[in-house]
Image (cartoon, rainbow, N blue to C red):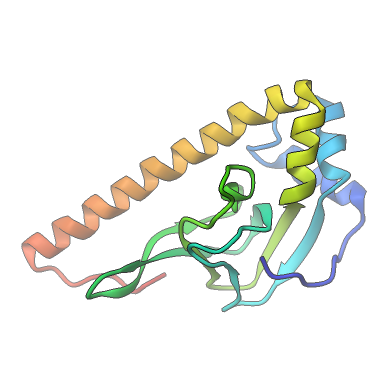
Length: 171
């Protein structure tokens, strides 16, 4: 992930995490522990946050803006498979071995994220079993949502090809 300068204090990280679907319903203690390692960052449009196949350094919740998830498709080049909106996550592979990006994430407009460094998040999950028991189902839900949304996007893409309809713009 890009490493711009943090722009807000930890209290704002607590509020941002608590108001996201990922953090909603987590205990105040869990939110505080996660927010303690988090930073809110502003990222310019056109910034590559994650590269497919490369080590993913951070897990992040998109607070504002949109991020295109792209993958390399033989004979077609980079194809946007999903656009991530505020409230969703990017970088789940920072938590799941082998910690390699499954797609390339590029900001398509200015984005604000709540970023948790992967190494620190993994250490928290290993050392605090109650925290891991709270966060793991959320992580699985996030991955499940991503798989379902990507599946629908790919079905739509193949349906357009079959009927000869043009592709929408890549955002």
